Amino acid sequence: MPRQSNKAKKLNRSQGPDTDAAGSWRLLLYYNFYRFGLACLFGVQSYGLVLAMEQPDPYFVVGIPAVGLIFLSLITFYNIQRRSPKLRTQTHATFIIDLVLIGVIALSGFLTESATIALYVTIAAVALVFRLQISFIYTAVCASLILYPNYVDSLSGESIYSSFYFPLVTTIGFFVISCGIGYLARRTLSDELTVERRGIDLANLRQINQLAVDKLDVGIVVLDSTLNIRQINDSAKILIGSLISMDHIEGKLAEYIIRIINSSKSAIFTTHVGDNILEIDTFPLFNGLLLKVENKTETANRTRESRLASVGRMASSIAHEIRNPLNAINHAAQLLAPPDGSDQRYAQSIGEIRKNAQRIDRIVESVLDRSRTGQAEQKRFALTPWLENFTDTFNTKEHEKHVRFNISGEAIKIMFDPIQFEQILNNLCENSLAHIATIGPSVEIFLRTGIDELGNPFLEIIDYGHAVDPSKREDLFEPFKSSDTGIDFFMVREICNINGADVEYMSDSYKSGFRILFLA
Image (cartoon, rainbow, N blue to C red):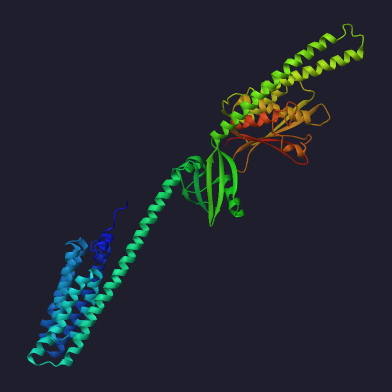
C-alpha cells in the first residue's frame, strides 16, 4: 500500500490545508511579499501625511508600525529560506503581528480605509492556510478592532447609531470573505487530494500492469507509428534485443512492420533471430502496433523430431515388410531363368523382374537411409566454400549428364548440421537432375545465396527444368505424396526444421527450384 500523504492525513482529521507542504511555504512567501509592499506603502503615506499636516503624529501612529512591519517582513524572508521555525508557528506569528500592527494603523484614524482593505487580505490569507474554526477566531479579532472604537464612542455618548453602519458592513464582509475563501480552499484541497489519489491509483495500476506483462513468457512490445518503443517487457528484450537500438526497431524487421502498420491489418509471421525461431503476432493500435513475440524453437523442434521419428519408424517398418517378399521374388526369378538363355523373350521377362526388384530394393535402402537422420549437431560455417566442396564431390558420382554448378550471391554463414545439410542438398540436386529437360552432355544448376527482407540468410537451388504441377504443389512436402521414394521432400523439410531452417518451393515461367531459409 502506498504511504498516505500528509495532505490526506490532514483532510482525514478535518484539518485545513497542510501546513507542512511546500505549497504552504510558497503561499507564506507570496503573502510576505504583499505585507512588505503594504508596509512600504504605509510608510510613504505616513510621510506624506506628516508633510501635509506639518506635525509628527501620523509618523508615530502610522510610520512606526509600517517600519516595524518592514523589519518583520525581512526577518520572515530569512525564516522562510531556512525553513525555521516550524511553518505553523511562523504562520500564526506572522498573522498575529499583522493584525496588531494593521489594527493600530486602522485605529489611528489616519488611514482607516486602507488598513481595513489590508485586513481583508489578511483574513483571506488566514482562510487559505487554516481551517474554518481558526479562521473565524482571526476574523472575530479583526471585527473587534473595527467595532471597538465605535463601541467606546457609543458608551460616552459621542457616537450615533448611523456611525455603526460602515463597521458592521466591514465586519460582515470579514466573515463572508473568511467563509467564502475557506470553502473554496477546502474544495480546492479536496480536488487536489482526489487528483493525487487518482494519480497514485494510476501509478499503481501502471506498475501492476508492467509487472504482469514482465512476468509473461511471451514478449510484448508496444510501438508508435515511427517504431519507437513505448513499452517492452523482459521476455521481448531477450528475444529481439539484437533488433533494438536506442529504443527503436531497426533493420529489415522495421521495414516489414512499417508495411503492416500501413495496411492496418493484423498479421502473423515467423522469423529467425539468433538461434531462435520467433513467431510474431501483430495487432494494430490507434497510433502504432502491438507485437506479441513467442519463441517457438523448442516446441517446433520437439514436434518435428517427434514427427520425424514417427515417419522414420513407419518408413522402416514398411521397408522391412517390403524387403522380405522382395527377396523371395528376386530369388524365384533367378530360379526361373533358363540356364542356356534359349528363350529370349522368356529371359527378357525374367530380367525385367529382377531389374525392377533390384530397383525396389534400392528405393527401400534409400528409405531406410533417410529415416536415420538422428539428432542435429549444428555448426556455424561459411556457405560459399562449403558449396564449392559439395559441387566437386557431387560431380564425382556417376550421372548420365555432367552437372555445371553456378554459385553466386552474398557471402553468408549458416547454422546447420553439415552431414544433414549435405544429405538434403544431394536430394534436391538429384531431383533437379532428374527433371531437367536440357538436351546435351551437361546441365546447369544455379546455387544462389543471399539475405531476405527480414535479415535471414537463404540458399536457392534453381534449375530450368519442368515446374511441379500446380495441383501437386500443396502436397509437395507431405510424406508418400511426392518423389519416387515417397518421403524425399518430406524428409528435406523435416531435416531443415530440426536445424531451425525452412524450405519452400518456388517457380516462375522460366525456372523453378527450392529456397532454404536459415537461422540468422
